[in-house]
Image (cartoon, rainbow, N blue to C red):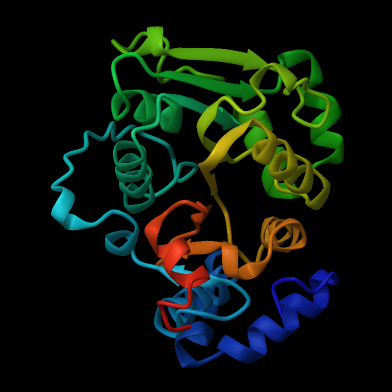
Length: 275
């Protein structure tokens, strides 16, 4: 359903699959929020089903509690435009567990996630973060979906990390990811985080480039996965690049990962885990 090309059909089927009295009550109370209801229900379904067009995994399966990893989070004001704290905690845990020293983020926005990558990586780590230059914002707004256009208008690139103690670890890059020259970074990144433009062409391109700049077996993370709204193209594009059994949605979040060297992925490839 989420990978059907027609947005109207996706929304109709999503409504039919998830509608209940609570959704109707929500529509009467908060119509603007009711449209996100199917996404929340579907993420709960994936949490329980564990396997459909892709896999679902708990953060404990991905970062074993036996590792006793400690993380630090910068909880900053975001007016609802940032990843929830649960997702931020997942990113911090994955950063620590992967021992990433070279990190590339596509989509800086205020710089909250870049800051948290820097905080939770080694002292000698480098976080590269790519965002649109001011001169290209109006052009992108004209091409973007409604939600992306709103974010581009509100963006203040890197404002959260510029004056932080971790600013020296973060390298701000500017460019349109559809045109940016990623070749200097090929095969050098331990972790890549994609949270840029969410339309199909951009996500396809960002995913293909991410796979090129990752070291063999490196960790690739996407945000806004399994979302019914304007960001539906994220899911469709990812599954057009990678087979679903190599994509893991982190339970009850909009984060998805591709990490071929993780023991969970190796176990699935070797038939040691059930679907």
